[in-house]
Length: 309
Image 1: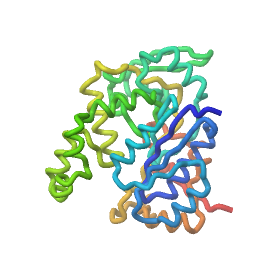
Image 2: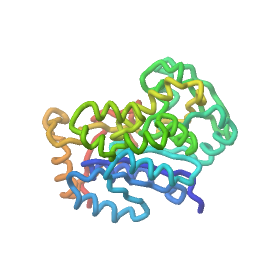
Image 3: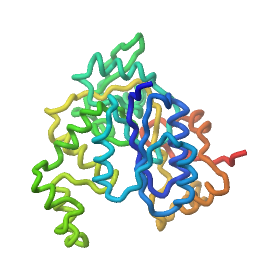
């Protein structure tokens, strides 16, 4: 079967959470229509990641050496109709029929920036955004005008958690943010000798940013989103959605030094969670499905672990 969506997911120091992302994705969406790439920042927990990747042999794993180059290489080889980005602390707890998403783009493509799997009608109503109703294949879906968004979520068009974008639109955005002059690319690329000399200075980062280079999922998202906001006349203004299907359950940072606690007593640093993972503990996805997060980011109360039998 022809793949419909290329899923590009980013991970660092979170094998337990990445497994929850992948398991929940394939629980609710047809694996035969999705080609997943995992861009993996190698730092800690290599053994656990290697074990996890063996469970998902159809995933194409890219071990990050230069984030910008690695990400562009994946995007440039995409031959599916759509791209779905993912972050390792996102979990899915419901689904939208891919046929509905595909038909929406076919019918209203000039109007759609992306089809969100994070937004639900009730949540958007509480934000105060105006909702338009559309019928696709006898199913009700909705849209909002992102340039008129009332919240940081609804006016943020290019996000990496759970939105389906036309692949050509993603390529257009990233190309638009880049300086495409061949000489500039050669002299001011992240691996160029000049940039390597300046690497330890703040100037190198600012210089690369000015030419459209990004260094991490955060900068890929924020810099490209800001460019879209500043060039909104070049893009469709609608984000479509049907119901909330995914949420980022943020319980820790990906570094190993920040101490964060849950319920006042449990240590949830990445090292602690990796030890739990090695002991056979996994994210309780059934608990999330029964206690559906309301917004785009779930409360820590959604994060429950259970031990595999």
